[in-house]
Amino acid sequence: MTDTPPPAHILLASGRTPEEHAAWIEAGRKLFAGPCDFFFAAQRIDQLPPSNIAEVAFAGRSNVGKSSLVNALTGRKGLARASNQPGRTKQLNFFNLGDRLVLVDMPGYGYAQAAREVKEDWQGLMFDFLRGRPTLRRVVLLLDSRIELKESDRAVMDLLDRAAVTYQIVLTKADGVKPNALAKKQAEVLGVAAKHAAAFPFVVTTSADTGLGMDELRAGLSEVAEAG
Image (cartoon, rainbow, N blue to C red; front, side):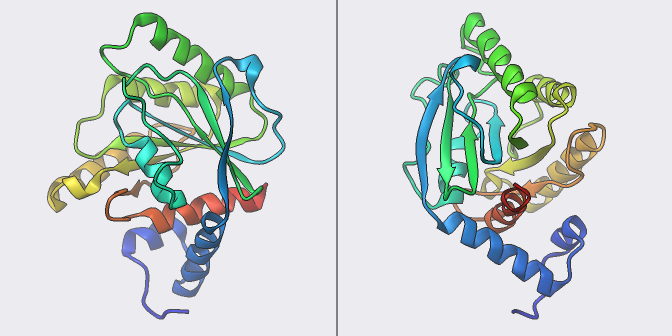
């Protein structure tokens, strides 16, 4: 175990000693070092696979970097694939992580050029999945750290509150933001999260390119797997 303490914001978020923090990180590493395979896709609520393993769903606006994040978490470049036409992908994609956790890649939202029918279909499918899936333990809500919070992001937070699904906000693409601007963005999002009953009171800041925040996100998701 290392004697080097974790960053201050991690200590505040986790409440762990340095030794406990190191063990927490190791649990996440072990979980995501296991096999991870695509096994199901569903475009309607009546097509969902049987639920017998804890699930974590990933949601975010089109082009927020959701596929890149899932690939970085699992260390597999081609596991999750972004659509060539943002806003057109409507299905839920399911990935089995070592029979311990299921990762669910949800359709992107908020793409301005998507047809109204696509957006409405996505909202219906998402809300039905969120409120009716007994094994769904957490939603990871991705926000782009480079741009302002959108109305569609706020609408999804409200939807998650109504569905009573615990969610954690994760900032993506942090390598593209200068430190002062990033700190301001983190404070803004923390303030927003504090106003939502279903949101975690801390935010993980990530970069799929540099690996920033991936250890902490893996470790947090390992807790979901352990809880079952």
